Image 1 (cartoon, rainbow, N blue to C red):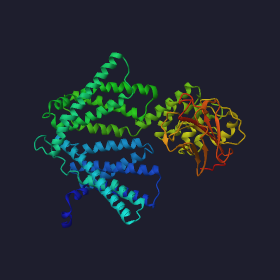
Image 2 (cartoon, rainbow, N blue to C red):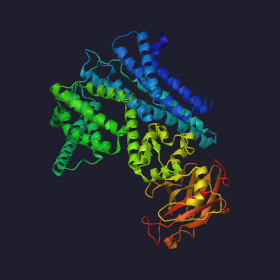
Image 3 (cartoon, rainbow, N blue to C red):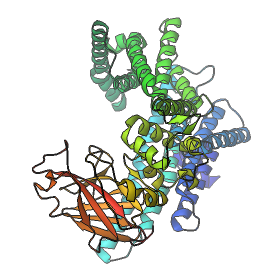
Image 4 (cartoon, rainbow, N blue to C red):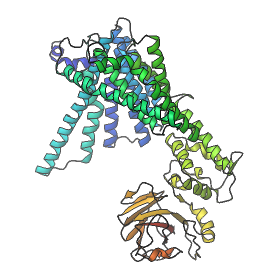
Length: 601
């Protein structure tokens, strides 16, 4: 006991949170064992473990704060913490690879942590505000401690390596920063959580440096800027009413940012609601009423996007935010302007947690909506009848061409992939020999096979059957008589003289140093184009082909590989509207490969 009395109060306070500390220690051990090579976790499983551990630690912290302020026994607090941690971890594991849902849960739990200690009778709003401020400071100091300690150790080791030629393994730095992020930072933050949750804050009673700083920022920056922004939003709404034009699609994000900043400002300004400057006092009385018109703009903008393109997680949460704003405005009206400050983080936490699972959740609603859009789009083009693709073989190639040329279809598939639901379109290929899902659906090549990168890549069996007959379709008509058994066609690939390479459409985001099309890597360093597959590679000298004036011919320029035409050829297509005919800076390329001679991946 004498030893414990000498331990600093900040360290002893960690003992109030045994379950969160245990979760941090367990995660630290697992990650360090992974770095050291003693255990092996896939990237997917490692991500799930991290998110599950973070959620479990936060849920256990919520239970500990609630138990502490309700004067429960230590055993009851530990049991409550273990139960909360188990529920949170299970919820996170249920999301699979949909990490957006994991982040939503973490956000909801953080907001629940703010209010957990004051969900009881007798808790004052002034004490709640003070406790929330101290939690924020604790979190910031945890990050500061992480950066100082881990950065200092890394600098020390790097100095030893530089000055004394002492070899330092790269994994050493991984151990340091992993331990800091999963253990040191969280423990430091936990140690700073105040033990007295009922300490009330009174503005102006004993103003210290922190109070003065908050007051000045609030009175002279935050509140005035939010009010000016509110005026601008209302002028824009009046313009829409006069011109009868729907709001622009991006207005949803502007209203979301405005609403978040304004709500945070409202919570910060609460102690100054009666003693602040006039803009602050007026802002506190009218904030949620000021959001009524922006809420209507947000609803119109999101409704328009959903009607055109269906529900996505982003649009789901914009709708959820609009509903929450409406609920807060109604609550403020019913309460006569005397809003309980705890209702803000508590209601948002409940909404976020509820949206992270179940058939009503963001992922499930978005998947159903995007699958509906997928059906409607294909049916409108006459290629989907009774749930099956009505295309002549090779069906996958033709489907990939359709995807590569249709931004909306490509967006639908991208959304389904981000929601770990791309396999939900497998039904359209059912019973076909060229079903791309017969292979591993997590293979990176699947995106290229389906045309999701804005390009399409034939499977080897399809290419052998189709290439000698059909050739390639592009901006210019191409007809080739091929006497070599090329079994892979890749394209279109766009290269320019600065070394940028992009895939699919000319204005897609370029990659410096190269691009990847399924298992095919492409690099361009003027004038040499290098194509790799696995450990093998071929190269093409484009020097003469891309000279000014060479692109005026209407047929493609055939460029054999350095090692011979039997390995690969590149087709340089005449540029059209994307570049000057006299001296183009961007070139469209197609690759015909004989994979038997350039290796396997």
